[in-house]
Each structure stands twice: as C-alpha cells, then as structure tokens.
Length: 579
Ligand code: ISL
Image 1: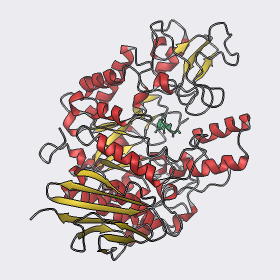
Image 2: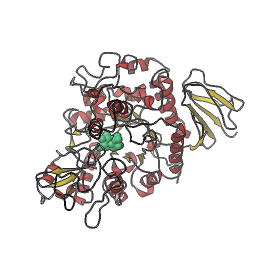
Image 3: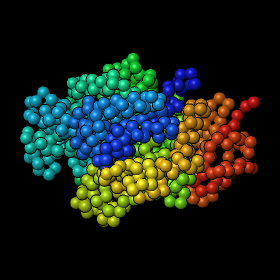
C-alpha cells in the first residue's frame, strides 16, 4: 500500500509555506498585512521554491481571534483587501507554479455570522439548531455560577458556554465567546459548508487546511445531552472526551469528500488540524482508501515541553521524547497514510527559540532543525519567517501582547491567583502565540520593510540583523539552506519516499536516522547541543559517502565508525547500498 515512485501523489514531494496575512506584508500602510502586500512578495516564495501557499483566514471577520472567527465565508475582510485582490494573488502564485490552500474554519463561526445572528434570535428560529443551544443545568437558574449545561472549559480559559439573555439559554464555544460551535449533527449545516467549499474550489483554490477538524463531531446522548468532562485542575472540566474525535467524525469527513472533492481529488491538498489525535487516528484520516484527508497535523511533538500547569508552564525539552514521538508517527504512517511535518505555525513559539539557540548559534540551530524536519517522510510546512531564522518576540510587558489566548489566560490566572506576575510573563514569553505573529522581517529599516505605518504588533528589534535582505545576501544563511532543502525534496526521491529508520534513540543530544529507497540510502544527523558530540555511525558509512547538505563549510568527517559533530551541526550524507 505504501506509495511508490509510480503512484505517489504530487504532495509527497511538495513543501507548503504558511502565510499569516496580518503579519506578512502590509501594502496600504495601515499597519496590518494584506493581499496587495502578498503580491509584493510572491517572488520571495518563488525563489524559496515552495509548491503550495496556505493562507490563514482572509475571510470577513470581526478579528476576535485574528480571523479564525468568520462572519462571511465567501468574502475577503476589508482589512486584507477584496475578492478581486485574492484572485490576483492566486493568479500570481499559479503563474509561478505555486498552489493555494485556504484555511477552512468550520468547527465554529463568528457570533456575527448571519447564521448565528438568526440562530440566537429565538428558540424557534429555523437556524436555532445550527449551533449548540442548551438550557441551564437542571435545577439551576441561568446565569448562576455553575449553571452552565456542562462543566467544559474553553481553549481560551473560562467556561465553554455563554449565556444569551434574550432566550435564557447557553451556547457552546470551545474557543472564544465570539466563536460559537456549529452543530454538525444538523444536515443543513453540513450542506451549507459543502456548498461554500465547492464555491472556493470553483473559484480556483487548490485545497483546504481544516481548522480543528477533529472537534466537529460531539458526543451526544440519545436525549440530546452533553456530558461533563473530568476535572483535572481548577473547577472546570475537560471538554476533550465529549468533543475530540467524536463518534461521527469519520462519517462527516467521508461525506465531505464525496460531496466536495469527488472527481477532483488528485490536484488538491487536504490537511486536517487535529489536536489530540493519535497516530492510530491519523491512519484512519489519511488512508487513501477511506477517502477522508491527505494528511493531518499531529500535536504530540509540540506538547512535549508543556508542564503540569499546561502550555504556559513549560518544562525543559528532552530530545529523546521528540525522537520517540517522531519515530512512532513515522512508523505508524509508513505503510498507510502520510505525515505532515512542522515545527512552527501561528500558534506555536518560534522553533529556533524553543528547541534551538536563538543567540550565538541561531544560524546553526535554525538550519539544523530545518534539516532534521525536512528529511523525514511527510510533507514539510514552513511558517513565514521560519526560513529567515526568525526568533521569538521576547516581549517583556503585557501591553505588548495582542493574542486573545494569552490575554484571557492572564485574566483567569490572575483571578485564580495561581501564579505570580513574573511567572505569567515568563509563560507568555516562552509559549505565547504572538511569538510567531510579529511582522516578517524583510529588511533592516525601522519597521523591517513590513509597513510604512504603525505595525499592529511590535516588530522584533533583531530585524536589524535578522532579515530577508541579509539572508539573501549570505550563501550560508538560513534562507539559502531552506532553499536547498526544498530543492533536495524535489530532486532526491529517497527524501520523499524512502523508508525511515531512527538511530540513536537514547542519545540525549543527537538526532539521527536513515532514509532508504531502493539502493539509495541517506544518513541524517543533527546535533541539538552547543558542545561537540561524538556518536557512532552505522556500518557501511565512511569517508566515501557523498555529502549532500550540511550547515558548516567543511562537513564533519566520518572515521572509525564515528563522527564528531560541532555545535548544532547538521549533516546529510548519501551512499549506494549495492553495486
Ligand atoms: O494554540 C492553541 C491553544 O493552546 C491550540 O490549542 C489551538 O487553539 C488549537 O491548535 C486550535 O487552533 C486553531 O483553531 C483556533 C485558532 O485560534 C488557532 O489559531 C487555529 O490554528 C480556533 O479557530
């Protein structure tokens, strides 16, 4: 069943680039990135060599969660431009051989979407059942503390239910109160979503990145009831068991496939965002015979540094855990299905600051991290600025933050009195989503070439040295290294399709693996350390191996069955196993 050179889908050799529009490039001087801005930078993407661009939401939105709260799925928010601007951007990308994937946010809408406005207007409105409305808990009065229909906490702190005074009922919002959850049990909801998706495909886009798609099926009792979740810490319960990977999820995805993608599947890219999914779930989502998705985003590797108090209570990373997780996903999807590969996106801190060294060894560690990731089996995703080695924001005061998740978290943590102000700021500085949302650093000018106006969020002061112009001028830069990695995936079939074997699983600082396709074998080594590290190499690898890629001018030499890697060194070698 495993993909072969003959039948492998196009996206096995593709690299995807994620644009977070509000921070990419401002074209009109209002301090917010937009589509005219994207047009100025399409050649950067072409030079990098990516095959696909995924746009975080561009749709009309009150921007409560930076566009993940959509009030019109079939229009562009005026902040970003117009539908005609989007057509122009799509045409400009297509002209450079780059496909376009839209974010699809259909677990919830904005509370300002006309569907929700109607739904909330009365208990007998025809769209009432398009969302999750429930009366207060039995025996309790609406508005009383604890009267919410279930004890579920939202992803953005506080209860996942909001009381609507007009009808005295609560609605479910797994994210902010301005993001009510759609009721996928209702077939009219599903048909409305599918029609919208067909409209976008007919307009010329090439696929979807499906936001929290594994939350769309909730666990509903025969009587329509939803159940409390386990209470782990605090007073609220975990919504996961009642909402994550629900009983009808695969049925809905297969139905979507038939209703929307049938007959045009081959040219599209369908990737699901699936927090909490196991590798066993991923096999089901991505087995081509099941006709659901092409690949999903795992969250296991980006949860390894979360501490007992959650993501804002981080713990030091143990590299062995990363290797164990990645090896499990590689093995689990070796014969059936496919992996997505990512370190960064708009929800995660910058990888060079998180798993690397964003000081002395910024270039070395950013290129090493990229090498290790891109040489796995799967489709790599590059988040804007990652190819420049951009770092965390290193904000030091609360007023620098913009993200609803961070601001709500602080509000609730203060109310509970669990953490000191210093602890709160340290948690945000390490893990806050705004770390990845500062403007892309194009040049050394005052606003990094991002805007002529006042940027909506602070530009990282290190743009004077870390920027695209400087990166482009330096052949050893992070940018040129990404360019070479992308090219390698396009030209060396073993990168896309080779079998994966993890080496050195117990080594605390060195990541190593081989990729094998027919008689070609690649050896990949990456040091996660600022000190020299000497490791054994497998039999058959010696100084005759061809050096494919590295991040030092002269690669570490193999000899006597071992190799000594310098700080954050990455190395890719190739040999023939026969003849
Ligand atoms: O960053 C997170 C909170 O700790 C994640 O749990 C995140 O909320 C989750 O990955 C879902 O993310 C997606 O849906 C959210 C949106 O805020 C994120 O930006 C989006 O990627 C709601 O639409």
